[in-house]
Length: 114
Length: 112
Figure 1 (spheres, rainbow over the protein chains, first blue to last red):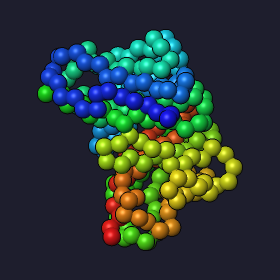
Figure 2 (figure 1 turned 30 degrees about the vertical axis):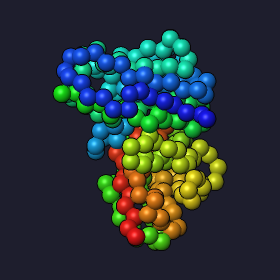
Figure 3 (figure 1 turned 60 degrees about the vertical axis):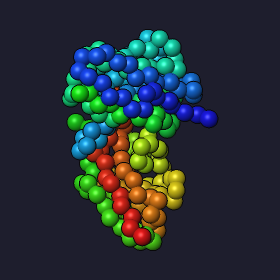
């Protein structure tokens, strides 16, 4: 089954404690991205990757890092989380940057930073 | 700047009645438009898209959307709503850099 998986699904942490949210897709997609969803703001792109070792900032990259060492994986790293990063996070992938194919989303990770 | 507007935070409709969820957009060039649905505790699921061609696009679960270039709109419609259609709906447009720009979402509530 074609899918995007994320782990963990729920996470409660404290300010300053480094964390990583994993994302993996099994569709051989080149393009992957991370979004955060906040009430009244919709989804905003944090980072995206056009292929292995190629990443770039989205609209709200501050406080986040990503890496793309393998095509299937695109982890989101919060080096020093703060309460304003409490949000619902989605990983997504599609065939490539210019493709009009469907973009697939993971199930989401609900992060709470105390 | 590219943008998407969903003017209604919530839409309420009785089961069996037609529903419309509104979306307007602003983008340079030809618009690529999408609708996604989010059920509670789930990720976004693709419903339908407009790339080119027929202005009326049919999608999953009986939904359809009409592209109107003159009004820069892409409203989501369904002839007969189901209680199970209750969810959060997002309109999105692809900007010239190929990034998806999302609206703020519209919560659809279908009452029995």
